Amino acid sequence: MTSTSSTPSTFRYGGNVHANGIRQHYLRYGGAEGERAQRDAVILIPGITSPAVTWGFVAEHLGRQFDTYVLDVRGRGLSSSGPGLDYSLDAQAADVAAFAQALGLQRWALVGHSMGGRIAVRAARSQPVGLTRLVIVDPPVSGPGRRAYPAALPWYVDSIRQATLGMDAEAMRAFCPTWTEEQRQLRAQWLHTCHEPAIVQSFEDFGRDDIHADLPRIQHPLLLVTAERGDV
Image 1: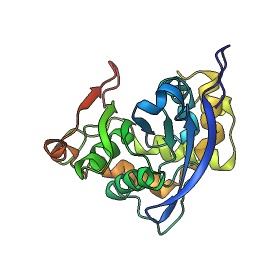
Image 2 (image 1 turned 180 degrees about the vertical axis):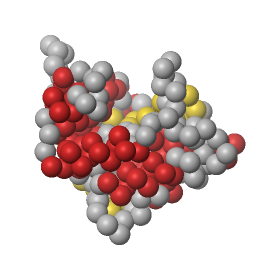
Image 3 (image 1 turned 90 degrees about the vertical axis):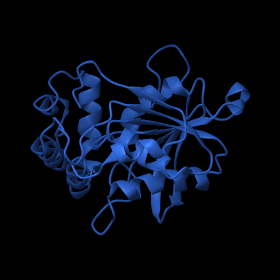
């Protein structure tokens, strides 16, 4: 959460808010002072097994220009988790709108990566008050009658179970061989906070939820960013 360069960190604090019936944990970067006060706030939604802390390196940059909030999606990080919780895409999308309302954000943009992009699309479909635009980064295009998500579920489940028992960055190399030492260390530290049933449902819902049907109902500017070798 801190900057590794000579540039001062934009990290402000971590917090919790009760919204949509659950505890939602977030990290705030930038703040609403100066020129940032005149710009829309940014809510960043990470992917399927990425707690908010793993997106600090992006939020550090966004925080220089925008009041930025990184969410722990339910079932991940320090947000509400455990059995009996609704882990559907609809619930995740409702969390986002409730989060913005609970914090009193007047104008806000959504940036969603991978699964977070699907959450952003579903949230925007209902035209929540205050939403101005959205950016979806490499969202899985899976859905009924469409190509399958390219990753394998055991890759997620096996790594979560090992992380729950305890693993270090070197052990994480077996799952993430191309990642940097810092990235593997952070994942090894936080992956155990990803509730396995939540991850399994989200993975399986990639093939069940039709976000393509949501797109015609979105009335906000939308920027799609894809990775050259992402193949999602």
